[in-house]
Image 1 (tube, rainbow, N blue to C red):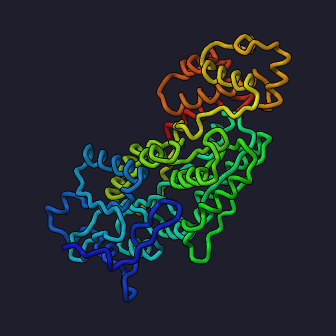
Image 2: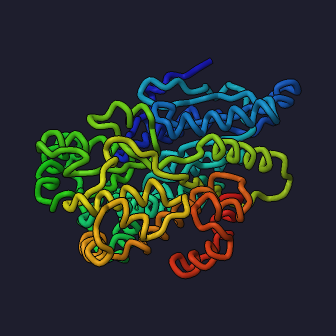
Image 3: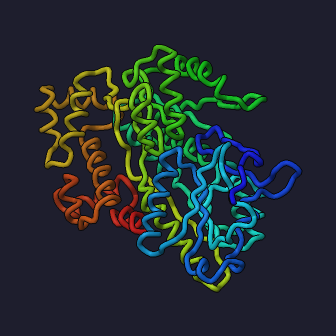
Length: 436
């Protein structure tokens, strides 16, 4: 029997990651979901042989769908599991207390009360991150294992992408109520400052009613107009990025010529249907969902007390779409030089090749390049090769010596020297983080 979810309150965070369930119903009782998710000791022998797993995530967005595909893949290869998929929303159907017990839970936990109820019931839980500081504290207090996005790495990728595009003015737009958004904001601004530039931050304090969607478009438009142009903006996620693009349209600002925007999560439906197709930091969500399911499987099999474990959700790279596919240079020759370097850095090019492509004398090119980009032509070539090498190390299984060749360094020792001089880390650091 299924109990209508309308008995439960429903809450949605402005961050675009909905909170599908709460832990109380009218009268202050624990919701049916928490009551139903209890150890399988009450189920029949046959039902105990097939683990019942409750999966609570937002299938309306790509983040949740990608994780679900990974969970399903693990179930197919190492199960089977009986998956009860609860995508959330006002019309959600929840299992009644008489339903069979569950062996484990993979969930976006929406309230501290639900976290406490799951902890009390004693089933293994893998939490899908936290949208608020309160929930982060509750999940950690309950000792639940957790997926955590590598927000520092996400922001650095976005910053590097916009710097590579030649922008000298930068801004960040996010949701201050969300801890992951604040980390991305801080890291993005810090990275921009380390490169000698300034980063503007939108004061996105919510209104008293909390209904920011009614107020933000006008505020965003005014803020965007006040920024120096051209400007490169990181939005904390794709929902926010689409909102920025809409505000650009309202403000009459051209994208990407005056405002370039990069989001995160790479929700293809959102990105492709935005006013201007949105560039976005992408993840291997299927792999992450698989790892979350594998962890839950280990927790269910282990008789020992469960120790809290963290699964990192690692970014891969920026999927470039129209919203940031531009070189922001007032000097057309410098823009040509940047484009040539970006397209040919993986080959054995040097400063003379860039000079030949632009038709300028070396001294003139170096002076104009330093004026608009902030460093030399040679430094830009090395920077592009390093970014290419990092991507190959993270995303392929190529031997490191082959990475050196494909990135344009030629020899491994040349690449090693470049990493130590410009990145302070050896190449193996990026391969190890990819494999961990």
